[in-house]
Amino acid sequence: MKEYYTIGETAKLLGVSAQTLRYYDRENILKPVLTNDQTGYRYYSYTQFHTIDRIKYMQALGLSLEEIAPIIREGTVEHLLPRLAARKEALLDQINQTVEQIKDIDWYINYFTYTGLGNDASGFYRIHLPERYVLEVPVDPDEPLSDMEIRLAEKKGRSPYSELPFRRQYGYRIHMDDLLRKQFRPDTYFIFTKSRPDHICRDIQVILESDFVCFRTPILKECWDTDSLRSFITGVPHKDNILALEFEDNLVDWSDAMYEVQIMI
Image 1 (cartoon, rainbow, N blue to C red):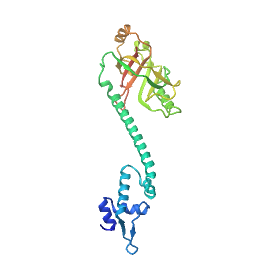
Image 2: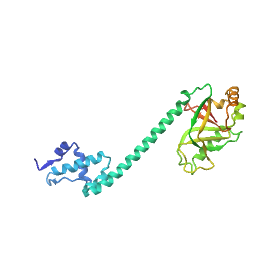
Image 3: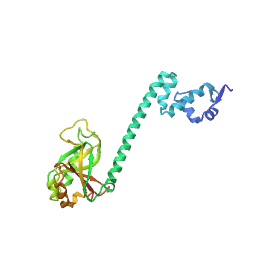
Image 4: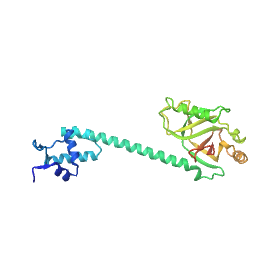
């Protein structure tokens, strides 16, 4: 076995580039065991191959060279273990973030396809929904929709709501009397939070878990069937806690968006 190996031989044997080995030398991560003063040629020993291999596997684990350098210089497991533990925590955090992103993607896929799937869009149907949370603003009956949207956007952007994660689904609270008159006169305008806020306050409202009877309509056009609605509610005990939730099917124009009207029973 040879005692010394040139930088080219070392690079070829260990599957790294000569530029990488020069970088290790320049950054004082691993210096060659011998440098010829006359030619400037660098030579590595067989024992240094193990160090180079360790650098490679630590990089494969996601450690940076800035993290690896002091570990190699100290040469003890005690300096390696805390870095590995920290790397593990970082990866677990990435996994959790990825899982949450997948949940968000699934939610938006369902949101954009909901009104085209499942329940009969031409009549009434019953669903059970869990407890939900919304940030809402009151609505003046005479104000345009744009004003209430601006006020809700302003509220979302202010503390303590600016850090809340939201689902981009908007909705309104409305009354049965207005539905029966075929009038869209909402009391409040709201957006759903992604999860239960840490603090429930006046602006954050809780929609209790319940059964809901639903029907679908482009509610901004005020064109639902009031006769069917009046006939239906005659025999169904219900509360005057009615939600109209927007389901967009167009990313530019939402004036024709379908709404699911949810009547709590």
